[in-house]
Image 1 (cartoon, rainbow, N blue to C red):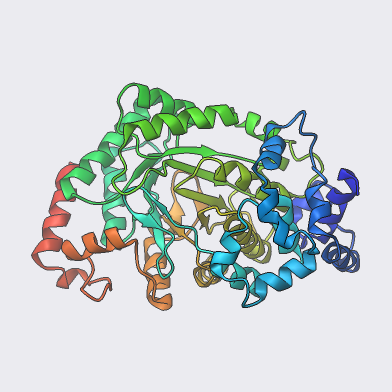
Image 2: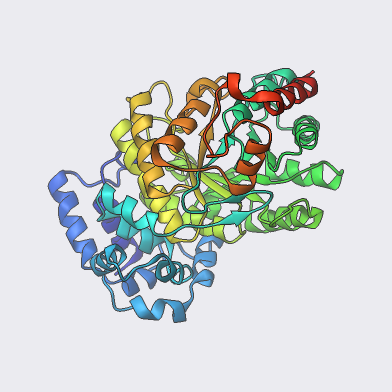
Length: 455
């Protein structure tokens, strides 16, 4: 099989989405799509492995994918077709430990191929088996737990506005994944101000949380060189060298940032210091997809992510817009695919369950996807005040949504964070969110400290 043949097969087998039609790689009809899925199911994993989609001489991401592969780990499944591998993944034989043992046997193209012949329930059932656990100040990804990123964005980076949003999130038991701020201005001075604000809150409250200002990786490197309190280093990544170049990054740059952050030794229980965001359509929007369908390109970004032992990775699934994922059905499918592919590749996957205001989607669609992802064992989701990000102008999930899904699914925050929530009177001893009126002296003290810091 040639690379072009494999690209076409993967694209035609992919469930319909607007981005693939925009790229002119989608199947022309549902009948053609089903035929491609049947052909893909009969395709051997070894054949996919032996067919690089991009010339490795021109793409460092393709070279990375080749270098990551472990032939010995691949040996037990080397005779499988895509369909046989799907059947094995759904079997009782495929335990979490057995799937985890395949981490370096699997390539993005293999897991993308499997996802294309899976129903939504298959994506959920298989991903549920494969927890990926990471640590910094909290432990993220344990079965039975769901972490939340507090996303206190403000259009002017106003300190009081940011602090008030953080306070709101902590009061709902959110923030165990990260306090992660998208800065209004990508500059070392702006990043440092926000980092120092979160650091002050963390120390005043003695709270086991980590911070991240989602500025460009070079801004983070500059801040670290000047002694700023950097916990996690953020960067958007994609599945080709050309797409990453459009973000102004390279693999060597990410390694430099990882080394710098680890050298600060700010983690208390682990040293997973990177935070990556991805999204279907990112490579296509940069004309850096090489004729590959957007879901396969997304899976390739996870090969980049896992090379740097991140604490957190999330697909911002509906953020790029309806040109790439048109409606709630496409966003739901993409979110489940991304989570599935990331988990099989050993990536600590979260999902920003979101949509833009011009997409054919609404908050009911997000409720559905949030619930499905919780069933699937997603590591973390977003907590945005009122679900409405007033700086980035898109709709995500709120602190209230996090409280709902934890209660409905019996999920807890990260253990270290849950212990803190109980100690300050936000949670009761059973791990449930206490009403404001019942939080007692500890809760009042915690709130007064936050308000004092906000001033």
